[in-house]
Length: 432
View 1 (cartoon, helix red, strand yellow):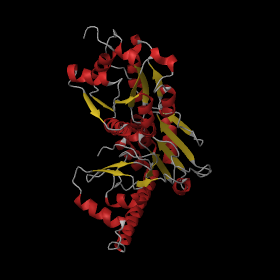
View 2 (tube, one colour):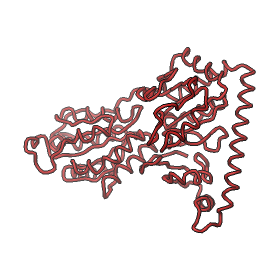
View 3 (cartoon, one colour):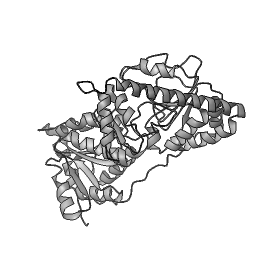
């Protein structure tokens, strides 16, 4: 389009990046977006929400389900203020949101007029990057940077303030797809061999995993490593389907409220592999003693900020979970001795048998309250499971009742895809 202004250029850039949806609640500044869509870009869809938290929440869920950058549009300081809480949840859940907010214009900065606010400072604590466009010649440059930052692991929301005079100005920038860095990297072979040696020699290995596994599509690789070492797998900051809950080595989720609940599990291990998460995401985490004094800790993640953030590790490795776990599995196969493989088999068999017996015991205990009045959660979960369609999606914000719900509707099964809030009311999208 010749002599197109900024609002048209933005839509053209988004379409060039394969982005076809914008979730939002518009104000006066953003009305031009809607006009541009109706008259010139019918293939681009605006998902209108009646309140900003809904727009951010819907965009959050879509971003996590697709693992692609997603646009959320808010209006000025009031709209951004309403959406801040949900943007925080998107940050905690690593959703690749690009939040755009219109404002009256740079020419009005000195006026301190109605709805004037420092939007960049408001958004900075809850985003990976927060900025304001101040010149029309860098509108698309900044937008591409925002899209790249949001979608580069560790993924997370970014914010761009769009003054109205920038949107109205003629934009001559060229449109081309955003460039993304390749992050399928793995540690050096000798470091993986060291990790394999530690895990192979373990008598009580433990794996702590989180949503970085699903973001990397590393579920199969995680399961393979767990089976190779005969180690139980526990989730921390884990709301995605990182491992099937029905797998014999899946132990469950560590406590998301109190550190003592997690410590009962973590302190029993002699070698711990942490991958795709941080330790620990509880509301009241333990300040010390989370691992046995002599335990060896290995941490693999693309987010170096989280490695050894709260507790020391013996081997901190920068790496993509899928690529790193795949190479670690190869190293383990060549490291494990025949005697160690026998120990792995015996250990895995014992873990599986214990899990089976505990499951049977819980189901048997449920019978005692099956006909209780008022209705007990176990009976509700049992009946719900029997009536759910095959493609059901459940948002699990049950917290104290979550174990009962998961007992009858385990995550990662054909029966359901579960959405787990982990104690915060947001969308954490999980693929079946």
